[in-house]
Image 1 (spheres, helix red, strand yellow):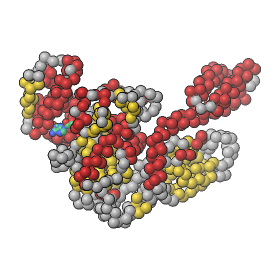
Image 2 (tube, protein in one colour; image 1 turned 60 degrees about the vertical axis):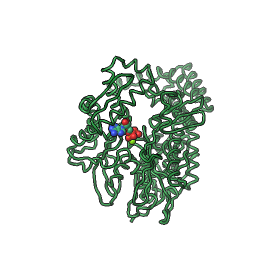
Image 3 (tube, rainbow, N blue to C red; image 1 turned 30 degrees about the vertical axis):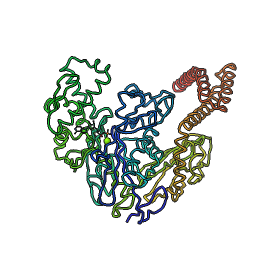
Image 4 (cartoon, rainbow, N blue to C red; image 1 turned 90 degrees about the horizontal axis):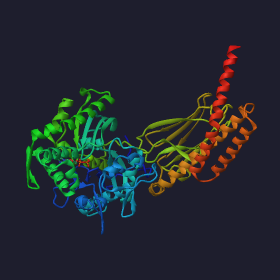
Length: 618
Ligand code: ADP
Ligand code: MG
């Protein structure tokens, strides 16, 4: 039997605990929230009771921020104060986003290329985390209104391909919205849970999750075994979604009218009218097969057949991604047990038939494709709440674990959100000639400097046989078992000298500490990145100083007195810059050193080759 351990509190979950934990699908286009009560799952809808989708759009108005349909209406009249597609910005730096920046109506500010992005509104800067938090607050508000009770815990879904930074950003957004994020779950995993796949222990299945949303397309292949959902492959296109299907309809209508694409671009409200009507047409085709309307006194229509032929290329692109994913996973169609459709765009009959034709089997489409991810998140939340007792829980490490390296930097070996049990390792070496001992200090946390993280323990690898610096191969291995016990092993591979240490309760971190660490890392992300850059430059400069010293020693017969004193002068300069706190100054000084020594090093190399050749001739 497995005991559900609360990883963050390091405690065993008590049975009587019956907190409502909500499940949130934080989408690029639409978001929604659901909860479960041990048996049934409820999706929170608007007051009309029909619509569960909250457009993931924020508008900054005179009276503060509004989210959802009201914000969506402002896209035309106030594009620079209306933010959409925030999910695309999560965990991204300016460098990552150079292409997106020009395609949105709001202002993504351009600072230091490596810094995390911010959005500017009225001279104030907002991080994507803060913006996503606004969407999450709206969802939280909706459930609370419905339940007439406060909620404070959530499970949030993310695409399977989200990296650590994007997952962390999502978690932090939850924190800012006043939600303790108990788990970040992959969207395809949630979708399978919604269909009841993977809910029993001995089940073994391989499934395909095809997710076509408003602006993105993802295909994931999952293997489910003993309650573990493993992503075998993901593919997709972050710039392909329902909007592109609207666009083929717009282009078709434009070809029937005397308006050019440029003309439409220049007339914002006409453009919006076309977009709205095209989306209506697309949805109508899904149900009744054709659509008629008039825009600016022009009669327009489209039928299913025309739409199918216009959409052919878009659909082919998605099928091609399916092919690639199957190839990556090394699977053939017979290996696939089930196919799950996710995302509003999979309501289109042409999509359903294309996917089912390609895989040669029927598809799971009995649930509302808009709601499957939120429903699955709610089921996962329900499991965490302890309402479904017979279920096996797969746990993940809530914080990264790593060791201290030169300059007090944290070198992560097992990253947060890794599923347990897990093992990972890396090789290191010594920095001093003849070094006999190596201190291994183990930390947990997300900050770049170990001093800001939590120390789990420390031990020494002793009796390393004397070797020149850089020669020993020291492997550090982290083995984290299912109960959260971490074993750290250090082995010098040339001599097989080995030491190991067991660290208990790697998860034993209090909720408060966790919160503080996350808030800290949020507030300090930028300054951490600067400090990290500075420390890396100092390390590099120290290496260059060492190399220059060696160069002089090894070539003192061939170098002139002037050359030696010039190198010494450059060394002093460089050494002085490492005492300061400017990465740029250090780098300029390193460059000056390189500029002067590179030709000398070349000459020395030529000399040595010449000498070696002569020796072999003799
Ligand atoms: P995301 O996951 O990106 O937030 P959604 O899953 O909410 O997106 O999908 C939104 C898209 O689904 C929109 O492009 C919308 O036009 C499309 N959509 C919704 N209903 C239908 C329908 N009946 N037929 C075709 N497309 C639809
Ligand atoms: Mg989605």
